Image (cartoon, rainbow, N blue to C red; front, side, top):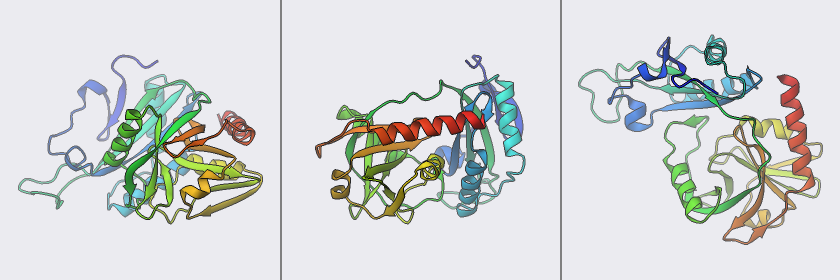
Length: 278
């Protein structure tokens, strides 16, 4: 467990969390103008940090956020050590910062982007089946990384909660399967592992890559619809918070499946890979 006032990295300094203050003019607070990464920590070590750094750098380039990431892995490890974190996550948050006086609206001028690195204590993810709700919200923006503007996903999760579900399934405006509100989606048909193509508007996760590496059969990426999902033998989602979680039902479209053997085998293989890396 973290102490009551944990240590964070904030604007080039290590500070107690209670001493970190963000301006009301900060663009991340006002507009969600920034990006983030969540990195799994196992036995006090960062898991798959290079993949997170690659995606973070793509986001920095795409959104024209100028920051040096050369020492970021070391900074994250120092945050882990300061907080005596053994199991949980490190969150890396980027804000564009505060514009110079006189700047109004969305245009940005004179801002200085910065990092916040925070430790979060949490047990290693259990193998927990989930229920999905087919969201009425649609995704359309193709971002190269996770962004601080998550209103779409918040609304989708609220809608799922209203319908007694754990998460939401999101389609694009043409009805193609894209993602869940907090992770990537896979399904298995025979010996084929299926998942949406990265040309679609969703953010490919680091766990998505790991699962595709671990799968022993054919991997098929494509533009799939709900009809494809209804033919699946097993369905699961991936993210750093759940690793691999089987999907038991998707309401209200009547999909109901057990947590299948391939999903369980993939989760076991992923657990072993993480344990070995730690």
